[in-house]
Length: 459
Image: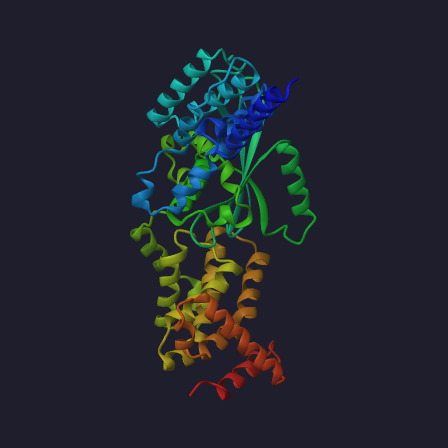
């Protein structure tokens, strides 16, 4: 080859290399991103079980749901359904017939039923399905069956105070393939979804839980309860509403990918919603509703103040009763349930921040503890809890009593000054506890604690 031809060939190679380098540096197009996603999920999308395609679709919608939950309500209402964002991206795919096209069509079928109540999702998904068929893609063997499940069982794993639920929902499809959702629902402050898992071996897991409870010291306070479809739907409905009203803090607390299963959760709730709406037995259908009923609350207060438990605690004052009933009204209703978590909330957070008058703070502790004991016993009788469970709550009241008195002895301005509420209160309690330890005070001796607090009271 002559020098001229070699030089010409070298120039061509350099130009080709430059163009290739330029292509590698350019940002990926929507079509590139869509293709990469399908390749990443090609294996589950090729599955003969439609649940796998649903899981992929739900995962892809996680980012969209995070944007919805992070946005103010007025803005969230204007955002498109997360399924529409995924469908829009996949519309940029340009593929030939083959495994990738088939995987994309499987995903399209799952997206079509992401929200059966949203006609835009079904319409946009249908367009995507037809586009992929035009490329030569083959429908999955389960096409038309996606999202068609029936509930086979529902169980609630919880403690007697319902602070937290592990809701176990078992489903099966037309081919008798079963799967279950395990949903953590927190009720310590409102209702929120926590971790969500897809599980198999549902019955074995429940048997293991029952055995663990029976063999532990929680046999009187923990239980596995079978739920009707209406009750399961009511519990899940309240948790979903609480999550969308208050934000997905618990979902994101452990893992940023927890929202990956939110869409699947919403889809399964759609299957239960009819059972909830059609139920006519109020006690069966609405035990978990969060809507406030003033009339029912007034009756609850009347029952409490006329109860033997109330009469037995002679230190109760109208003010202490008012404070506790206001807490029930604002934070706890409609549950006549009162466990150690609620004791902490009342004695260490709510009352110390509500009572700001120095003179009242010095006298309210005794009546407040008496009212709390009466409410604990009253709630236990109303709900039908055992004596052992009641004893656990009374022990919690006794345990928190000196800490409550410490908090009431603190300057209320120090609790409210920086605007962090409970965080400041915990710091004050910790500081006073350390001071008492250094002074040699026996923290288990309520009289010694009161004597120290009187001698060291502010002002």
